[in-house]
Image 1 (cartoon, rainbow, N blue to C red):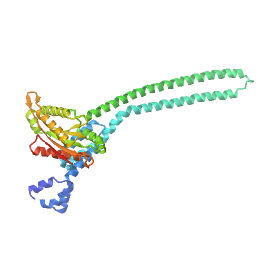
Image 2 (cartoon, rainbow, N blue to C red):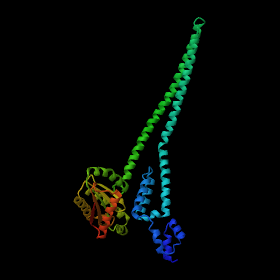
Image 3 (cartoon, rainbow, N blue to C red):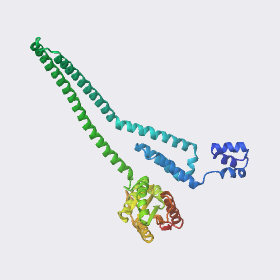
Image 4 (tube, rainbow, N blue to C red):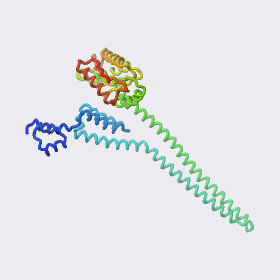
Length: 375
């Protein structure tokens, strides 16, 4: 068995290796039927997106970041989904997500649990005290009913008066204690309400921060997808035209290699600012990853979508990027997928893929240009 065939066998899954052994496959030609059973790459990409969406979002930001990082690697090389180590990692993340989320919930609800137990204790004590006071009053009532005024009634009434006073004082003391404890519980409830309010504010702030890319201030890839899905139904209802724009910087690796990663970050930041100034308020812009960006242009004609993309491209081309002792320029290539909702049957991921294909064509035809495809 030659080394080339051995190399091919080493890249098979365990199940495929078992089939090779079972069917006594001993040459590359006999492997073809087996390899044809593999899932279509487009379906694998859809499967990867479904798996990612099934484990996100998590309450724990750390888990979100780890899962995002793993699936970014998978999206760059979709065949990683068949790698055993990657599959084990995904399984670990699923377990981690549930355990971490559970821990976050436990931590954030511990004060509520403590307060419930405390209030239960106070209420039980109030019931017990009330029962004790009622029992004392009932005993006195029975004694009053048994008094015979004709037989030393005045002396008995005097003793009963003392008992009534003592019982009333006892009930008053017990109820004061319970009232004080309930008041203390009320204070703790108010403290808890303040904590809950603070927690809600922190969660709201965290959610907002997680939606924005830390370097550019644009929406993250996930937040971009969520926002587009929210408004896409409205566009379908009103039959408005829209465009998905996908672009990235040309030869960005050369910028990092030549001027350093900090210069690359400065370039991305300036490009993002240039994109923001080129768009309308209703348009949505996000950072897809690395030097890649996405824009959703709403209620627009195809001609205007191309004009806006050209404006973005020219503005980026004009940028003079300064960092430390380095001065340089950069360009970008842009792909557009333009559609009308009444005609469109594609998912957002498929529309982005169409725009990505147009971007690839722009790159292939010399870069620093706009290519538009429509449905």
